[in-house]
Image (cartoon, rainbow, N blue to C red; front, side, top):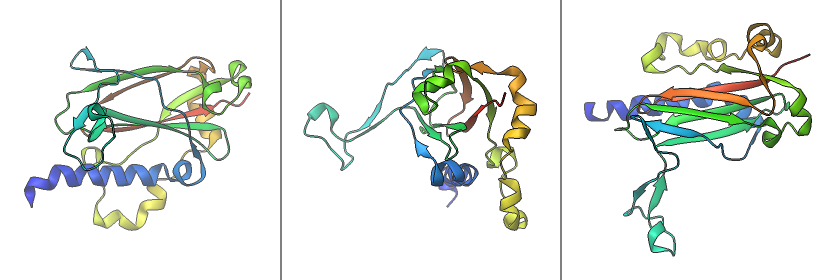
Length: 191
């Protein structure tokens, strides 16, 4: 049914993101919530939540009845090798305006310990195939492994560590359209 095409497209994009981030999701560990500044339509929405009061999930507190969620969902995942952090961002509302997201992360708070203060970190996008950027087609279905291969730390060091951030002030900036997905890999630079 054509009325669900946009929903199906978003679900496919989420599935592709899960494939691309599989090593963090399957072998890494989730970290503390991200402290991000979120602006939509020029207005600071921060952690404003949408409420679905008729959703069956509820709390004993009337003001928390139903399901509540923010316009942008985010999570941080430390790799199993403790050398990179994956930041996952998605705009979950179908009617949302463009979201501008920014924040400064102290990597010591995300699994790198106090030694992170003296280290440098590079931020690079982790590609996610969506219908907007080329998508998946049946002819390439057998090619999943090659398309979702992640760069090695040596490849990232050569490309991204010349523009790196100190461990206590790693800048995260992203823009999301409605139902957009952005994944950022924050890689420890080798000395």
